[in-house]
Each structure stands twice: as C-alpha cells, then as structure tokens.
Image (cartoon, rainbow, N blue to C red; front, side):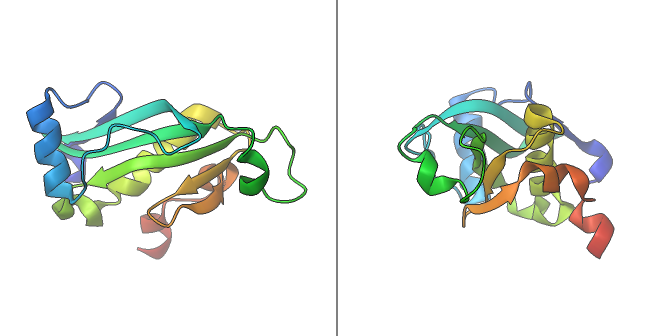
Length: 144
C-alpha cells in the first residue's frame, strides 16, 4: 500500500453488493441503507487502492426544520447549512494513511468550497465548521 496508489472519487463505488459487504466487514462497520433521521443523502466518495475498495464516506444534509434549532449554535444564521459525514469507513490497514481525513476534506471542499456550514463528523458526531476544514492543513502535515 502506498499513497500514490490510493485514488478518491465518486465513481469508485462498490461494483456489487458482495464487494460492499466485504469492505464493510473488513472496516468493522455494519451495513446500513438509511440516513440518520432528519437528513438526506447529498454526496458520496469511495477510495480504492488499485482494485481494492478501501474507504467510503457520505455527506448527508439536514432537511428537518424542527431539528435545526437544536443543531445550530446560538447566534448562527437560521439558514446555516447543516450536514453530517455519515458512513465513514476505512479498512483497518489504511487508517494510518490519513485516508479518513482526506475523504472528509474532499466532501466538504466539493460541497461548500469557501462557504460556511456546520458539519458533524466522526462517530462522536463532533460539530465542526466547514471553513476550518478548508483553512487548515491536513493533520499529518502539521503533527507529522
């Protein structure tokens, strides 16, 4: 495995259900076909190392106006976009490559560019600003 052989793209999706299920098992995730309540799918990205599916992530956006006041910070614009990185999964042997972060950055950059949004990330669903993802260097570059 080398960083040079890793490719990210929305066209690298699983070729069939068997490949998807094998990947989810290898990454330690259970199959799930639904978005979190109140969100709808927006974008997805997959990663491959040559022909091996090694990562996936989806960006889902908030559509439930009843949940909005509970998810955005006080004082934020009422129409602030809210999203969540969902179905983030990487094969165990690729976790130290920074692949998860690369996929998250790719999704956020492609959707918002320099616009602001609140994005919940990771298993803890930590709230982050989209601008932080675009204004800071990747963790591996900073912390080595």
